[in-house]
Image (cartoon, rainbow, N blue to C red; front, side, top):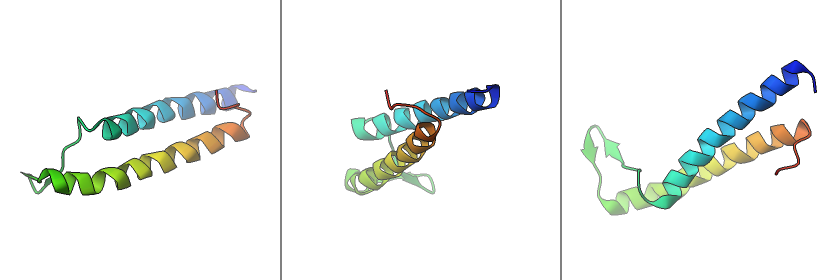
Length: 76
């Protein structure tokens, strides 16, 4: 790998760690709140958005992983 590839990989791993932390927070059930114009929503409203939000972060992780694999990352 040249320096540019190393810098790109480092940036992708940093971003991957951020997204993974967000996904872990969403899946833990704590640390996520939903407010619409400052009004917090009922638990059932929050429950309705948790899975789509988790899916969003999973897709983002898949995209980052695909980029890293193109650079030779084994997934470990």
